[in-house]
Image 1 (cartoon, rainbow, N blue to C red):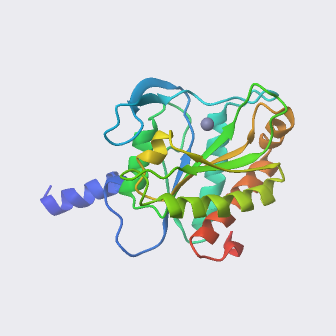
Image 2: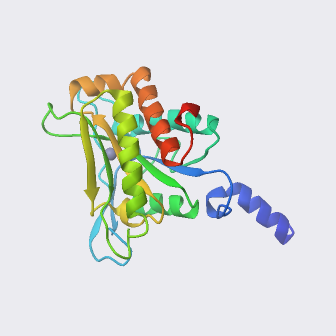
Length: 238
Ligand SMILES: [Zn+2]
């Protein structure tokens, strides 16, 4: 193939590797947590760090339903993708199946960075040894010069907006926001990044609710409204 044709073919085959144009439709990267298998390898928790963490400890599981967290995270992300695309947002996903070994958090952040995402939205559900623990919360990166200084304020703003809409949509207790300095996927991100914990899969009531299509759609709607608000768009488009 001629070089130009080859380049075009490569761009079609590997759209994530092509930088997004400076102007154009908003790009949001959705990151459903985990995958079929955990990944015990380690990676630095931030650029140049000597502190390392496992790529993926594997996530939690529904105490009443047995649903693995990876499946719930993906189900909500796929519903959210449909809503955002209908609203005119370009959506990229870090995974679209639950079928392999988790790629880890540096790789997930790089996908968002290469896409120049306006929001890197990570979707998880919580677990606790205490079955009474319940509610929704949203995490965002702590401030650290050289790592998160460029995305701290925007991430915190996104977290507040998305948390409000998610709590409104799901009706679970509001556990508020939490800053985290130890999340690899935050420290490697060059774009605004948040991680939502939809609810507790170790709480029987929240687990059963999150296993239903109705609550998964509610979660997706709340996340869509929050995302559009953060992007300065009309949340009614969700
Ligand atoms: Zn998780």
